[in-house]
Length: 230
Image 1 (cartoon, rainbow, N blue to C red):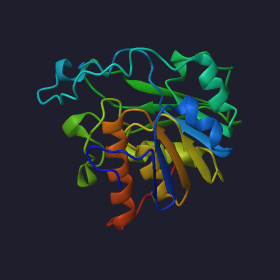
Image 2 (image 1 turned 120 degrees about the horizontal axis):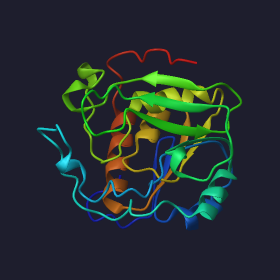
Image 3 (image 1 turned 30 degrees about the horizontal axis):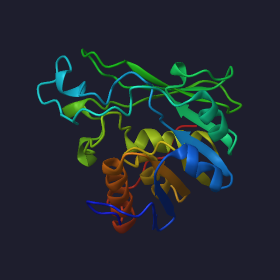
Image 4 (image 1 turned 60 degrees about the vertical axis):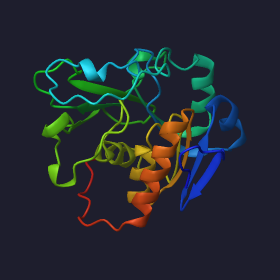
């Protein structure tokens, strides 16, 4: 596992292979995958200390002020990443120039009164109808308080939401996330018995992803995972 002051660019943890670096450089060396499941930077400045000033959040987390969300990924880079994967699910698809789709995945966040978006949209190339999952994620109102997740990244997704996304891609076994963040896709892949490859540019989040995925692979689930909606 990578610790503080990480020096290695590649870490293998069970069925997960993690790279710290620029996905535009690393991805072309990796071959092909069944599924691209990722949440790229949208270019809306969420990394620049926004969370600590959110309206109606009395215990807002300060994630620091970074610049990784100052601009979205280059369109050509995103196109090349898509070309590595047969099936594709891209959160924030409404921010990117992507082909028309019959299947958008809608995460209804059930936020209540706040300045967070009511829903988040994931573009897909899946040949099926639009699907929606209602899953609360706002602070102390998280959907599953018995297994409350620590939030360690300003745009972190809940593990159950990423498991739901994986379930939409059917039999896809090898999963690629070139904008890995804190590693939620990797944790979901472990829980569903899939092989995961992730890339993260920011060393502090790469270390967090390594820890979370290692913890997931070390610990046996104390509660069964409910079946995912199709």
